Amino acid sequence: MARILLVEDEAEMARLVAGSIESDGFLVDRAGSCEDARLTLELARYALVLLDRRLPDGDGLSLLRTVRATQPGVPVIVLTALDRLDDKVHGLDAGADDYLTKPFFADELMARIRAALRRPGAEPAAPLLCGRLRFDPARREVDIEGQPLVLKRRELLALEALIRRAGRVVQRDALVAAVYGMEDDVLPKALDSHISRLRRRLAELDAGVTIHPIRNVGYMLKPA
Picture 1: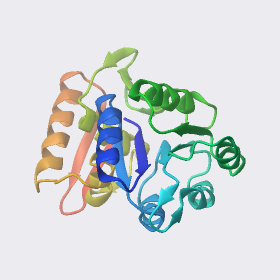
Picture 2: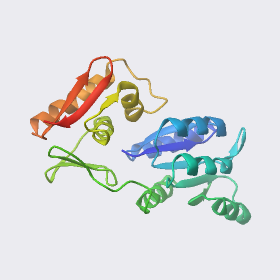
Picture 3: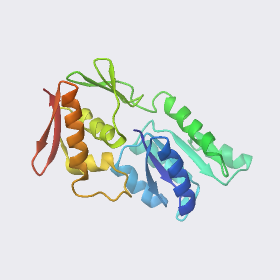
């Protein structure tokens, strides 16, 4: 699933927006200030950024330069109550890909997110291959020699992290960051449970890959 960064300081608004996005299958991280957002952008790779303007420590548009420097090509949609024409023009001229004023309908937000993710450069399109397994990062789909493989959300996120680094060890911390949101409470053995189910499923379907546990370090995906 694609990972989205929501930069919004109003807790209730952030909860509602994140809930709508997550119900559509996305993973959402939240930041409540410009400084929090800058730190978050250094920790994870995002498919899209949703950006409020009126933040406690400045105008959210000041983050556009950071987004472009740390994650080139990632689309940014501004979500704000600043709805005058000159505000919209300023936001778009500053580098935002889209500008949506509050209040807005959840359906319109999701349509704009989908449209932004379809644009060239928004998501890497090259398929990732390992064994008989093929992962399409643009469509968020997995198949085994053309036969679709449907996985639960966290198993899909774990598989993506592993197949992106096939043949190399992926450390536990990196897997946890890829599979869970930054605000999720992660139980000690939760990651191992997801990996165990994923490994069993791939073996049952003869995907031609194995997931090797590296004791006290992480996991590695490689051809069988």
